[in-house]
Image (cartoon, rainbow, N blue to C red; front, side, top):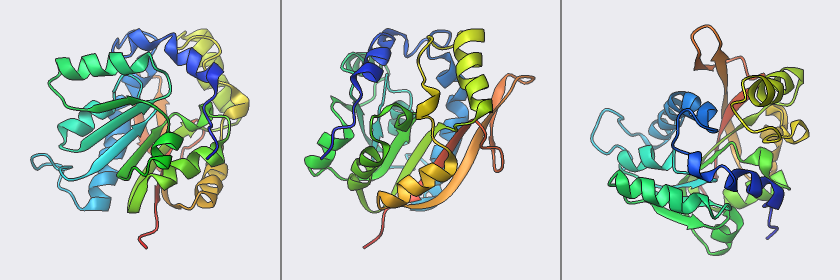
Length: 246
């Protein structure tokens, strides 16, 4: 199986590993986006697997993997909801940060320094694959998404977010976030690696998944917060896709 890890991309995130849980640090944009991301993720999982989010441990019995888990910002809420969680990252420096924070939080999460391709080759299976803000950093998006597809059990759910490729995304995700607001180190993103929603839907389909939903994550500079949009996918957006049941 093709290895899609880009060493240069991994080095960028290795350099920021210690700041994952600092809401005012280099990952401030993710902390700001977190409530919006979790709203979409939990709603999609609950709907697909008929779970009541108001109940105790609603994701009990589900096995979830977060590819590119970083410091564990998504793994920890999934574990609190009762899921069995595996967090993997190709940047070795992220794993001890995630492990330490999970231990401090009293959570059992299986963190591993590995890749989606390695998990697939090992025959691992999951009900849900979280693939958030990773596909724009790999060397071969189709090969990477195919590895994610291989990780899903029949009927499994794949959630993937990324950044659209257009003039607005260049202005906001690169010029705005990296140069004006300085939320991210310069060079964190490469505009040429951004993927349009139609392109991602096509890649997901080629990887053997059935795209079923896409929404935008929209930043409001007045309220200084994010919201989910049915129509505005111009910059940040998220998709849901299903693995065949048979």
